[in-house]
Length: 205
Image (cartoon, rainbow, N blue to C red; front, side, top):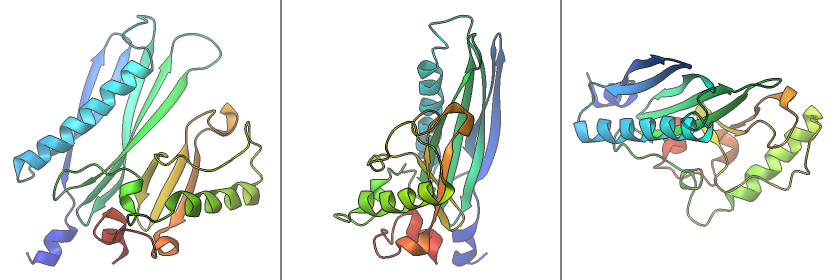
């Protein structure tokens, strides 16, 4: 296998399940990756994020809380792994609450990237992305709960194919009925500000 083919190889993912009273949880783990330290770093980050979701949903505090959790792979190529961890909790009332956490890794180093780290240092990525999201909110005529003043510097995101997908949690912008609001942005529309050695740069070429 050539170096170029190796570069495009996906990493192997195994699904683990936790099935217990009031909990049905599936989460991913990277397997068969060398060096092992890189694999360990990614898997530790994933498990910590899964545990934080359980904490945020009040699972340990309220014994009546029922949890259903799973994951979605968004990108697994070119030494980029991007995935979403989705956690639904029900503890009574009209409906439960779903939260989502996405992680984007370099499978070469195990590093987990923040939104800021996808872009060149000093680039005004917040203003650029906010303008694109604002235009899309207007185009889709989404009724907002609060005025949209821009994305957070650490706004939730994942990478899917040739797109950076910016998203908002339930109630963050719109009513529950609208669910998660997703805003896919072509990486080519961002090519002037993306860090070429980061995950978006890897997906461009």
